[in-house]
Amino acid sequence: MVVQIVSYNITLFAPGFRFGNKRSFNPFAFFIYFYYFYRKQLIKKTILINFILNNTKTSTTLPPGMLLLDFVRYQQNLKGTKIGCREGDCGACTVLIGELKDGKVKYHSATSCLTPLGNINNQHVVTIEGLNMDELNPIQQAMCEANGTQCGFCTPGFVVSMAGFCLSDKKPTYQNAVACVDGNICRCTGYKSIEHALDKLNAVLADKNLQDPISFVTERKILPAYFNNIESKLKLLAIEQNGKADASNAKRFVGGGTDLYVQQHEAMVYADIDFVSTKAALKGIAQEGYICTIGGATTVSEFAASPIIRQNFKNINQFVKLVSSTPIRNIATFAGNFVNASPIGDFSIFFLALDATLELTDGTSTRQVALREFYKGYKQLDKQANEYISRFWFRLPDNKTLFNFEKVSKRTHLDIASVNTAVNIVVNDGIIVDASVSAGGVGPIPAYLKSTSEFLKGKYISENLVIKATQIAQTEISPISDARGTDAYKRLLLSQLIKAHFIKLFPDLQVEQLISVV
Ligand SMILES: Cc1cc2nc3c(=O)[nH]c(=O)nc-3n(C[C@H](O)[C@H](O)[C@H](O)COP(=O)(O)OP(=O)(O)OC[C@H]3O[C@@H](n4cnc5c(N)ncnc54)[C@H](O)[C@@H]3O)c2cc1C
Ligand code: FES
Ligand code: FES
Image 1 (cartoon, helix red, strand yellow):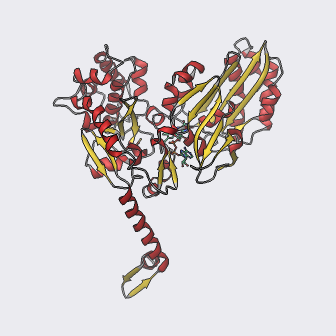
Image 2 (cartoon, helix red, strand yellow):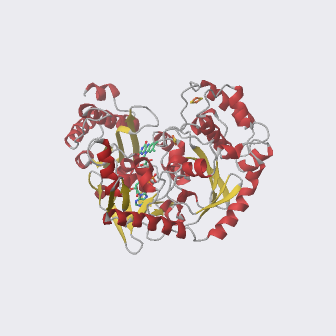
Image 3 (cartoon, helix red, strand yellow):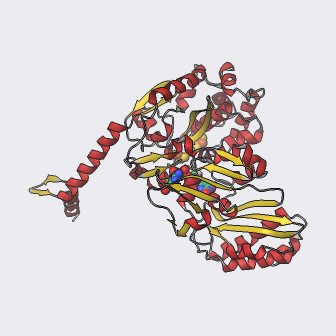
């Protein structure tokens, strides 16, 4: 029986194959083989990816959809970068990526298990090997002295994240140091010893030059001296490479890859990819009056660091901290979050409340779609396959507008939501002039709660109003029971989170009265 199945499969998929006395020819399979062979050759011929790997200029014609993790381990034999989950969760595969921004090299940590080669063209990739010096560097020394390593499997990822912290413009505070390793998981140490190592590192960084961290870490021999030369090397590479890495006839868009490569990392290797994250025109955040425009390929970390966003959303750090981890936020894009169309996508919910408008283009024609009209059904979008999100815009809150975002997940941090929700409320003398309420995890699409929003308009803020709003919200949702909770639990969560919005935004409301009604 087993032999029969093997025989059948081989004859089905092989174009011409001798098995025992049997020979078969399958024109369909022959076509498939030819197609994939041709596609591999096409990709090899047209796409050259150049980057600096540690201190070495590196070029490859391997498929640009190939993962950086596989490239460094199996093509470069740099086995210090470990494979844990391959889903962006554990941080064992963390590398640093340096890119030129306003002429200076800026580094961020990234999970190499979700980063395709096409996204690192013209950039500097640093693996754990690229941090080694003659002696242990002060980061490695701190981990040793504090017993921050036991089995050692997670340690390279931690050390790379800590090196990213040294190279960043972040102050050496306890909170910042802990945040830099929020994407790294250790199963042995219990984290206290790693925290002690972070304290030791902070002492080394006490007088860090935040304007020029690269000079600081090389002068103090925290990281190797070659980091000083990377800026000029990247500038040279950009000139040499100008325009050579563009994929032609690309059929799939990849932003950060943090969704696509979790779902289908093998299928993506030979896909024809348009690496939208590498397009400068799709990045950036600009303000004109009260309108803020954000490039579709802008990352969550770029958003959180933007002075425009920080000035207009005072709690942005608290909101963003609830979304994934530092290395994921460093590469995940907004367009990827919208198109991923997860019913619990945090930024879909965030921007539904802000009534964002998307700009879609196929490269020739351009059209606009309100985010509230974008979702047509579960994972169904008002978007053609060849259209990408170039940018989106929304109205920034003015001094009468209050915004809040809430999320509950099984773990407080680094987890996707059971239910998430946002509100944007314009208030004048205690009356709600305008209101937008959105909610995720309570139906097949990220939802704008139209009836709830309409109900709130023109009313005085009171405990009764909020309770009534939670009841109307219940009529607009259809949660299902799944791993993140039962439908009844999600209904309860949404009611409680709507109350949480109002308690935060209007501290005069009587909390006891609000929570007395479930
Ligand atoms: C460990 C981990 C934790 C996560 N935690 C969260 C979380 O807490 N909250 C959350 O909301 N999400 C989370 N995610 C999901 C994911 O990170 C986000 O949805 C992210 O914003 C996706 O963006 P991306 O650029 O990486 O998308 P990609 O994977 O590159 O693409 C996703 C989809 O969008 C399409 N796409 C990308 N860019 C464009 C464009 N410009 N125009 C048109 N289509 C485009 C792609 O073709 C694909 O269909 C997590 C993921 C991981 C791996
Ligand atoms: S292998 Fe776990 S995050 Fe990459
Ligand atoms: S030291 Fe073993 S997983 Fe961290």
